[in-house]
Amino acid sequence: MGELAGRLAALRGRIDDACRRAGRETGEVTLLAVSKTFPAEAVQEAHAAGQRCFGESRQQEAAPKIEALPADIEWHFIGGLQRNKARKVVTAFPVIHSVDSLRLAEYLDRVAGEEGRRPRIYLEVNVAGEESKGGFSPEELLASAQELAAFRHLQVEGLMAIPPDEQSEARRWFAATRELRDRLRAESSLTLPGLSMGMSADFEDAVLEGSSIVRVGSALFGYRSYPA
Ligand SMILES: *Cc1c(COP(=O)(O)O)cnc(C)c1O
Image 1 (tube, protein in one colour):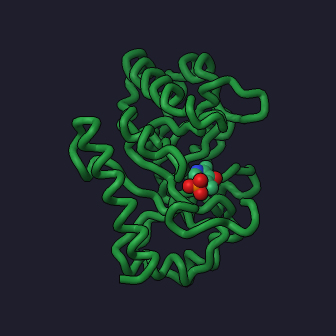
Image 2: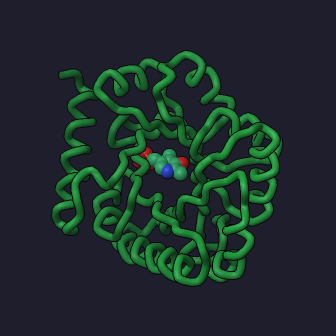
Image 3: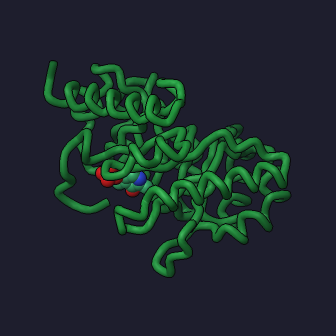
């Protein structure tokens, strides 16, 4: 087994262990391999080891990889999304994790309709109310429920959160995100099966609190030599 295949198997094992500890079925949690900054060859190697979902945060960086790599890969967009990239993102990515405002969602709905697409989306929530971060505030999200439930060209799959850097606090923010999801579900017709939460440093805590998809980059591909 290659080095990357070994790391992939170890990660899957840790996710399964966390599922068992949480009393959840193994296989309930999707591993999204975050390949930003890494070359197509690294993705190819992970693909050969059975990985199918990959996450990218920049449209321009992702486009040549998507072009070059096998068509059975499911590409997820996880980065900041500017309107001028929205059309390209909607056509290249079936899943978008970083929908951070109602206005952006409205725009994506329109563009997706025009392009004949129906992407699965996650609403990014600023669960700790950090000044430095974008995303819906919990209040905004609850107030937007009717509009969010009415989109015809977006499948609102769930919430996405990146908790504050303080690692020891991560778990309680994951729990808060799940509670917010449950409340939004109770107050609207949205079903919101998805919770996109957990990264290399904290994905086990996220699984313990109900994550359905963990976004793991450096623990799989190694350290990034430049930020993305
Ligand atoms: C880069 C990135 C990740 C992966 O981070 P790691 O710490 O390398 O696992 C996950 N989510 C988002 C939104 C990212 O930008």
